Length: 163
Image (tube, rainbow, N blue to C red; front, side, top):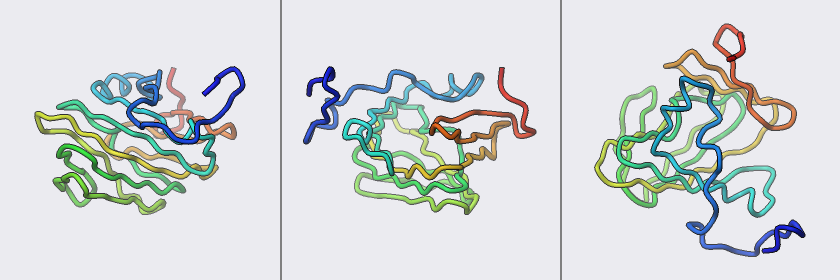
């Protein structure tokens, strides 16, 4: 791949994709809670614009995200390695390699993965990029608003921006 010419690869070994440079988009005090999570942003490498694909690694004790739900975006995870715990409004579910879970937009079902084990977890996450999406965080004073440029702005639940 020649970055100067902005060429996209035909195929890559997913674990060779570069790590995302910013550990988290969350404002503090939330960003620091994402320690032990590494993402390889695969979809962007191929110029995908309708949906995103990440290869994500969780160290022992790490979590995938704050528990959240989306208003317009569907999400899907597929466990490749390790035994994370899926936390949803229904409670915890232990996952094993080969298991998958999907989260339909607009249901309000807050979800995330937590690695309570002593081994690394590796999984694929897929989400669409529907404009106008909002992310809600039932356990935290946080709300995410997708901006017209596709980036997230984070505010308190009452609408005040984070400084």
